[in-house]
Length: 184
Ligand SMILES: [Fe+2]
Ligand SMILES: [Fe+2]
Image (cartoon, rainbow, N blue to C red; front, top):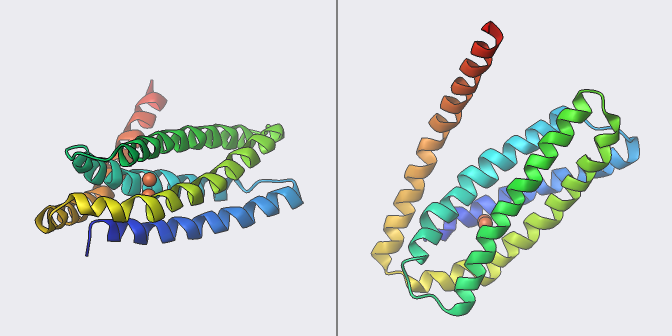
């Protein structure tokens, strides 16, 4: 398998979650209320899977190695756009978390901010994925030898293997901090 294989498979799961978010947005519009637990689940998916696991492999492995190649101007520009889009997606997710927290605390007005963020994310991801799938990933494989591609794929498996440990280590660190704050 080429190193873009796992990344393209991951795109399909992200699209499925985006489809669920689309349906959820329609429900919010219809019922004029938010299910904060769904938003938490969506945020966890976006942060842990779409951003840390997926964008993490793109940026820390594929884009890093492409950075060592003599890219065409078009590929260089596209790669910069993709990194910028990842950053932008993170900012929207922070906004969604904040709006959801406000909603949970009783501020029902933040429903419009929640809807805006979901709308933005469901427009953003398909376009970003299409740019990578259709215009970037496949031509970029030509910059690498077979052994370079194999090494990237191995590094991707390693990256994934460490993620579950990283996620739960961070959860414990956060829980320890909350406990310390409670005892003060
Ligand atoms: Fe990406
Ligand atoms: Fe991607």
